[in-house]
Image (tube, rainbow, N blue to C red; front, side):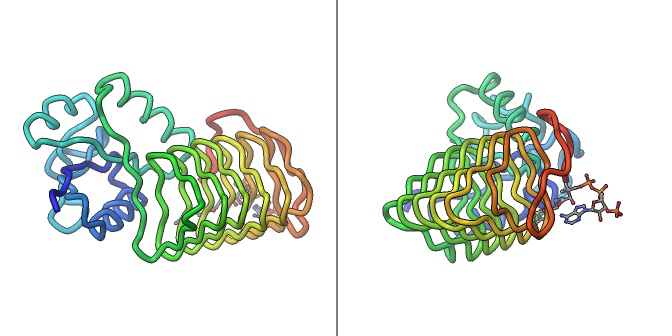
Amino acid sequence: MQRKNIVVIGSSGHGRVVADILSLMPGYRVTGFIDAFREKGTVCFGDLTVLGGEQDLPELMAAHQITGGIVGIGDNWVRSQVVAKIQAIMPSFEFINAIHPSAVISNTANIGHGNIIAANAVINTNTVIGNHCIVNTAASIDHDSHMDNYASVAPRVVTGGNVTIGAYTAVSIGAVVKHGISIGEQSIVGAGAVVLKPVPPFSIWYGVPARNMGERKAGDKYL
Ligand SMILES: CC(=O)SCCNC(=O)CCNC(=O)[C@H](O)C(C)(C)COP(=O)(O)OP(=O)(O)OC[C@H]1O[C@@H](n2cnc3c(N)ncnc32)[C@H](O)[C@@H]1OP(=O)(O)O
């Protein structure tokens, strides 16, 4: 099989997990990392190094026959900013999905592009995952659910069926979301929360049962 040469944008812990997943996918060869905040040549994962920043992409793509890649940045808002920057610099950049071979994904699920589906994740029947989302290690999104663009679920999150997770919203590590619940855009569900009521947009909810603990603005830090 002809492997596509690709890059991972972001070389922190999450970016390296993404490179690890891609190294297990037969269709791709990871050429290296793009990271404007780390010196060129820094070794990040195995023998893979930082090749340059986003501005260097046109030159790097031509030199290494790179067709595209994926943004491996955990913060949902920052990830969206970097995707926009790449689209402006290199409109032909193809955003791919990084899907761990142990992930279980229904044939009836619909998955966009730029998504990270980590080890042992489950995406069940008729669920829709938008673009540039993260379904992290051993998270489970059950049937007929919907994750909007740039949403994320952290390791061991479990949702029931018919759950909606709005754009840019982060459901934190180990949280449980009851079936039928809708979580609005740009919200945070805190670690270990049990969500039994709908979560409005731009809000922070946590606890057992989860309650409204505050409001937030787009781009507020949560990691
Ligand atoms: C592979 C990976 O690493 S993926 C990333 C995994 N990481 C996560 O998912 C973590 C996400 N972050 C959280 O869940 C955070 O707790 C947040 C964003 C919900 C809240 O963070 P902050 O606003 O900074 O809260 P802060 O730490 O100041 O705590 C405020 C109070 O709320 C409590 N609190 C904070 N989060 C929670 C929570 N999830 N559940 C219960 N109580 C909480 C704190 O104990 C503290 O109580 P205190 O005042 O009595 O000491």
